[in-house]
Length: 121
Image (cartoon, rainbow, N blue to C red; front, side, top):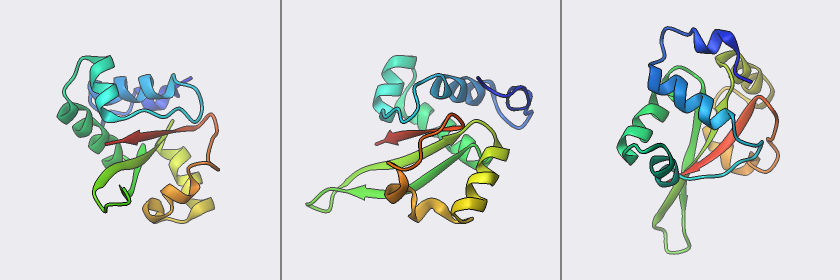
């Protein structure tokens, strides 16, 4: 369930609220990529990436470091999506205020109803 305060956050666009609600409606620990979201939501990959950037800007999402394959080529980013900016503050208090370097290492440990993991390329 999405918090009412999140839906009434005037900093977020309708697309950001919609994507956040869509992601939070998925099971805990759910994994998908930006291409899959674009296909399912009938949006471009750039549109999805832009909305994720908006969620990052307003503290509803964290993007981790780039994941690279054995050949050194870029594979994906890992994201953690929070139900509210307040939930992210709690997470940062527990895990540190600059979490992007730790996102990849914590992915398997961080599964709760207040945030989900989104793996995006």
